Image (cartoon, rainbow, N blue to C red; front, side):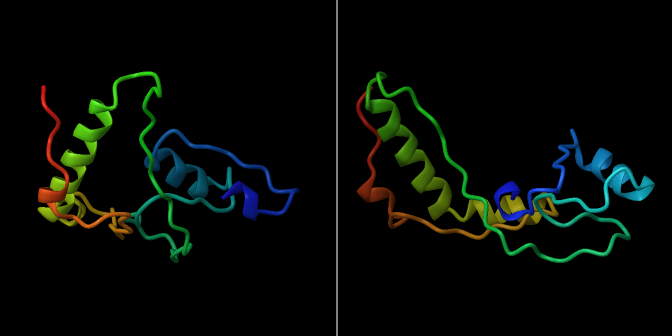
Length: 112
């Protein structure tokens, strides 16, 4: 978000949602941004910003690890688990933007 703010805005990172809420309440900061929607009496609105997530793997490690991760992720997506987790652990909201078809048959687990 920092890249979208004017240069005179000071970015403060709170260590938790509770701390951020306290900082907004007591005036330490004038506004806060968090993933999801707080279950509080704050005036809220969607930022409209999508935050892509990425895993980092050592490029010098065997590619079987990447293939195994791909196979596992496809199975999680195909089973609808991201939406299930979001329902179970609000206030998270899941918006999927997949770069491959969630078909487990296309991503077999590599041999051990």
